[in-house]
Amino acid sequence: MTLDALAQKYRAAIAGAADEAVLEDLRIAAMGKQGEISLRMRELGKMSPEERMVMGPALNALKDEITSALAAKKAALADAALDERLRAEWLDVTLPARPRRQGTLHPISQVTEEVTAIFADMGFSVAEGPRIDTDWYNFDALNIPSHHPARAEMDTFYMHRAAGDARPPHVLRTHTSPVQIRSMEAMGAPLRIICPGGVYRADYDQTHTPMFHQVEGLALDRDISMANLKWVLEEFVKAFFEVDHVELRFRASHFPFTEPSAEVDIRCSWEGGTLKVGEGDDWLEILGSGMVHPKVIAAGGIDPDVYQGFAFGMGIDRIAMLKYGIPDLRAFFESDLRWLRHYGFASLDVPTLHGGLSR
Ligand code: PHE
Image (cartoon, rainbow, N blue to C red; front, top):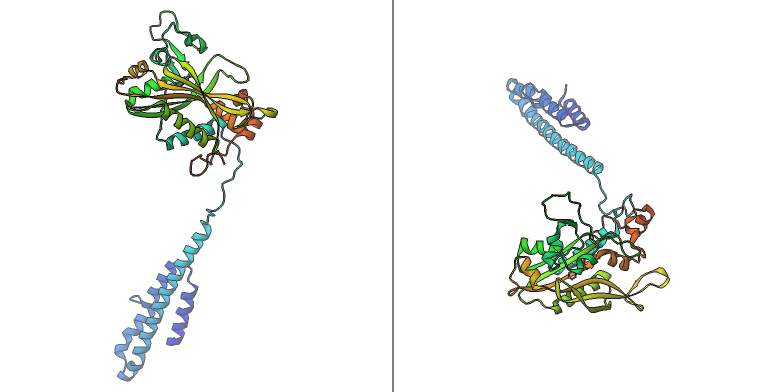
């Protein structure tokens, strides 16, 4: 075979190689110990000097050509493999998430996330407590002794106890306030927490259900006053309703665990069955609040002569109804799929202050 024919043969074989293994076989066939080119190189020694002058450079040139053709083909195969992978694993990261799927977030979950985002921004962390609690945490520690009328007013569900059961009485918590005590015990002061969660009272009509939701707030430090409470609540209400102005009304009130105490109403209207915030002649009570009673601070194991602060308890269901125009509280708990689809939220839209709470 002439050198030209040899070169032709390898050029074609390399061009048609399907993978690296074939290329390696070709390299050995040409330039391995017994390779076609290697054998011819070995024959150079038997040639006359004149022949060698011609064949030597020609063989070297062929060897160089095949070596670089092999390397070029190898690189081309690797490029093609990468292209193929990129094609197969292609993903459009700019596609929006599908907004409507089977499930939606319940307005209570949504509002809980929104409330948490707002208070987190003001330095409050989230605390939790049990829904079944002792009557000491639910009442006594909150300055509601056993003869106190507030116990009856709260329509408490008591857990059944067999005669002779020595464990302390347990209740379904009637409010999130017992978490004030638990947080003081666990964390001491200074302290800034909220506690969202379910609470229970034996009550049922358009605005009351036996289970509903509150978010408790508690801030303790050496110099916290009612003014801090008012500012925090105003900031919260503006952020929550996503408006520059909402009207709040602080009414003097009474709670055994705060002194002084205030209930807070928000201006609204109910025209045509839809609830509107910020205008109208109606007021809807959204929370109870006040300066934490010294006895409560002491019950939490903190010195009330050093620390003072405010607390509030807000109805999550109430503010959800107000913000999203939901007229009947009972619908929250009926699990009607059509209602859930209408009032539910896309679960991928996590409420944040910078990204928007509700969109
Ligand atoms: N626990 C009270 C209620 O359920 C609300 C409240 C909490 C009031 C904290 C004052 C301070 O009505």
